Length: 152
Image 1 (cartoon, rainbow, N blue to C red):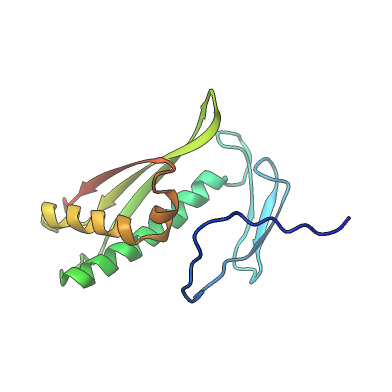
Image 2: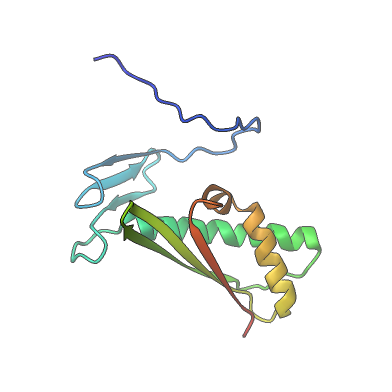
């Protein structure tokens, strides 16, 4: 069989590629595994809610998005010339939803910016949502809800 290349047509990105994450996955979400090309990631999968020892794609997506979002918050703060809190956190929840038309995702990001003025925290969260590559990838595709907390 000849190798077939399938490309999803999207607007071309003309920017410079700064990093490529590369993994090899076998077996899928129920008992499979995934390993990065550099060996830094080596995980097992189990279905959500099962007693399996592995993680699942929704947890990985939540971890990646929340880490990326903190970086986007820092960029937004620097561009706004605002002092960024020393201990920001983002609690991300990614739901796997089953409806009549199949599976989909929805998400909630709880942004913790302790000690920051509430309105500025909201502004930074909105700007970070415009900057973060995960937010860009999901925009218009899934429901996303933000909660911003500035309590110490």
